[in-house]
Length: 328
Ligand code: TXA
Ligand code: MG
Image (cartoon, rainbow, N blue to C red; front, side, top):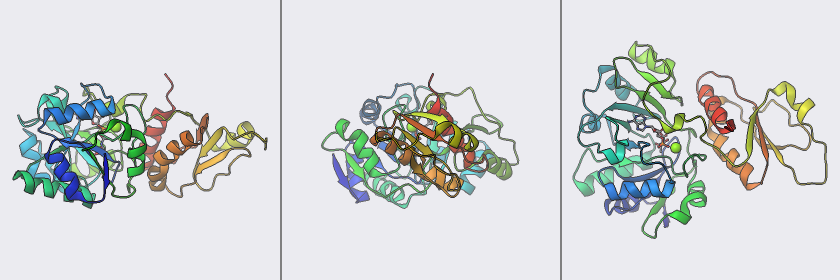
């Protein structure tokens, strides 16, 4: 595996059927050419992901919507035109270009145009190298299945280096600005539906399309499994009011075993390690996954999390905290 900061090197690796971990504004993806079954098979192997969980195809712009999708509803075009590039994935009926090995055998395909300039450069190089303007890079989050998504190249390396081959590339584009996976909207019926909350909210979708955007769908989405985004530490969602009474551990000589994630105004009980003190829901989203990884590096047994307010991206933070906390 090679670590690089050169988007062209990543595009060349992809061209040759190798994998490239790529920065997006949400989280890092593990990319492969979306038209190559063998490369996609390696994505599943490296992630240890069940083969029936579909991947998101990253495209350069809304122009490619009709190459990968079919019968795209007008509201989906409105969303693409107003919110791409951005932290939004649209699930549309697939065209023949979206093979079973990308869609997990479903009749729909998830499409995304990332706003990360380096991702844009990789796609531009790949378009030039292949001569295909609609070229797609299939990229799930670059973590092992069920684990916390990576928000830096270092996270990718520490988790996947062992499973990548010499010709695969990790493209370092710095830390992800959003920090949580893209919002996923199901656009396969007459009404949009929220499959996974993110920086773009169901209210944003409703405002732009004039259609209500309820949560849930019969479509399968692995990010919607109750148990997902899990660190090794046991995550517990607690209220700020119960922190001092229930969780003050005193100052024993032993190594700390409990960590805390909470907004900056909330005090840390004694004996507890502060993992993050965000000042806004946006900052909470940005630092959440790094903080959960830090808990594992420190060998903490328990992470206490005080949730942010549910407005805006706060709802997505709460969604991920709930999944990280699920111990079923
Ligand atoms: O922000 C993101 O979306 C990141 C970056 C790398 O783009 N990607 C990401 O991919 O989170 P992944 O594979 O970890 O999550 C993709 C989600 C899964 O829950 C998958 O089930 C869902 O998208 N998905 C993909 N194709 C779908 C489809 N045709 N129908 C329904 N859900 C789909
Ligand atoms: Mg994922």
